[in-house]
Image (cartoon, rainbow, N blue to C red):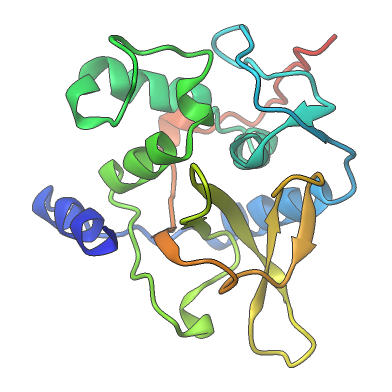
Length: 204
């Protein structure tokens, strides 16, 4: 599956972009900050505003952590994913008949497809050195699981730690190779996608 994703990205002629150091630092800082937030794992379908929508701040799943991390640095994945799906719906593994900005960006296979289409695919290897802070990793776990590499390592100093929510809320843990890796992405958003302002809290 990983090879297929990488081949599809290559077919579009897109070389993986290298994130600007400042963007990566802010992204990783936002990921680390998520570990201090209490979140109850809840995968319910929720109608949310668009753009800038979010489920209640004290609930969420693994994808919501990725969405909130990017939102903290001014990137609205809800909007980015929806706009790409509107123009290229057949390229996405959706179970719906049309794009739905309430839920699409919260599904692991759709986030994986979005990052691949953006040319962000990186090799899914067994070498921990290949996974850099700010990278997004997807695993084959139930309906899919996703997390972000942070700038901390396991006690041996070998494996980078991951910010993720596997059911007990966002946490930074040594889980990079705990499950089979099915996706590895390093994404620099286009300039138009970056907004320096904070996104309003839709839970209020």
